[in-house]
Length: 440
Image (tube, rainbow, N blue to C red):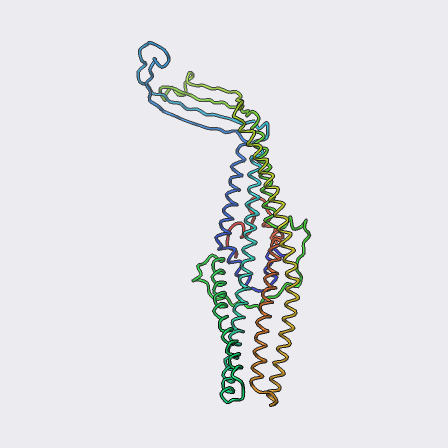
């Protein structure tokens, strides 16, 4: 399946709409920023594997009291003290706490990457679905307006026949009821079309007032000839939500390692070297230097069981992440299964509606031939045309539903992003959906 799966609908305007949304959508930009933030946190985390070196300089003016040191001697007066020194420290990661911490940061990078890809996938699916819905509403409006125009003409003829006494008035009431019912559907269709326009503008990162009417029609879209079908094992490597849950599970596992390491002593090496003097001129003299070096061992003998229960809490957090991962996989399999069944039923419904439309069109053509031959009246022709328009509306609804369920299948299978090598790179994937850059 192609990474840019929406191209399989063979619509240049649809492709442009999705690309604009990828560049301008605020939700995707937020996900991109979260990914970059996690990547920088990982780079910062790598610093624990290197010695920490600090350089400092201080200049103070002091007065000491000998009584602070238990001396009964006159004070030493006021003096200046200049200190220039450096400190080096390094933590020996004997029990793996630092390594597991960095491992957890790397898992967070994976989580944010797959979350971003999930946002990218959902955004593209929403754009395609909105375009399809908008096109369907517009074509249903046009068909309904034609149907209303015919029923209006039919009503006028029926009223004339009722006035002349050649038709019962109940026929007038029946047509008038159908006409009023169809007229009542127009505002609802217009509202849905306008809402689709507003949603499309929002997805593309623009205010609704700046969204112009799209010219995409259902007839300009093509159903893919071959739909993808994935095995459950493939699905687990394709869907960003499953991979994000797996990354969370990895992070929870790393947290157990950190909590376990906290139960053991912390061992490190530290040293300092510097010079101190009461004058800057003697700061580099032979008697001004000082230094120290040695190991440091810290161990918490008793904290009321805090560290022990923290470790137990992280283990339970891992169990939660494991359950969440399993549920995500099950929900994904259910979504794919539901969508495949929906497509199967859509095909049956669309075929039935296509047959109904063909029959209504054949009936209309026959009525037209009979009317031209003088063996059918104009009212019969209007009735046939009304049935044809109603069958056309039903067919449009069935066709739009199949387009949308096809889109749902692509999204349920992960959207095809795994075929884009740029999205699979570790670090900063070179793809507009990841980088937030505009495409040429």
